[in-house]
Length: 357
Image (cartoon, rainbow, N blue to C red):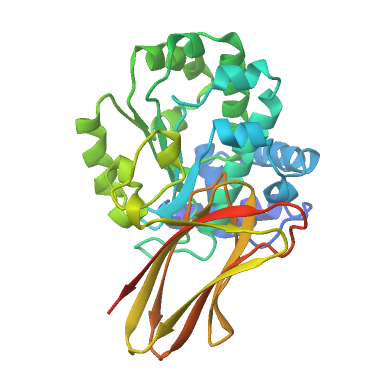
């Protein structure tokens, strides 16, 4: 999102004063975050304030502050995995939904409508958390993300399902009411007749500003160049034209070219799996792609027993984690997959580690 104009800076100050009775954190009352609401309502502060206060109340009622610790039902994450890794050319997070392949009708039939809506809210919040501390090329704080909706394999029975339409209507209302101006771009790819039917049903509840962010493509020869132009290859899954490994590859039935270099290891309950790499040369680099097949596990990297890549949690419903490290000193770099907190369950981790001179 572009930096505020002089006029908008004045509106931001007025808007901030209007909201001074609310207990907002520093991020919520920052210039760029407040600007999202102002622009969403075309600089009309009364409307922006009404929208913000309704959303603030909604966040309290739905415990959104703690949504990142919420565990979605396993059935839901298995049927509808989401790629949440990488950044586009503007340094904004990338999120990819294989929506057409997800059995949304089955999910609704099993009574998971509200859990699926919350699952989407969690994705939006996770995208926001990935924005923190990032700047665009112009030096403006990142407040948006790029979304890819893949409609491949969307069937007419799903597109015509009243329950699916009800779910999408609810999810869209949540999104437009509580996450204004958060899309940088939304690529909708592999659109078909089934998608056109579904889109016609939900378009009336979409805001005009959200619709303007859509770029729709029917075939791969159209959408692949568009994605490659916006997302660096090492941040884009190989299936979509890049070089990155993704949790979506197995879901869509794609066998990555480097799959023979991806190793798997079982980490027992209460155990820590370690991969030590003795670095004898200076000025080398390590690159890796790590993930987990089911559940979650802690991952971190140490150099001579000192943590150099902070501990993070690998989760099966999220994309694999890409990373790199410049190694300026000889010594032992150790990759840790820590399952010590799990007393009963073993985990299977996947990893690809490359040493470059």
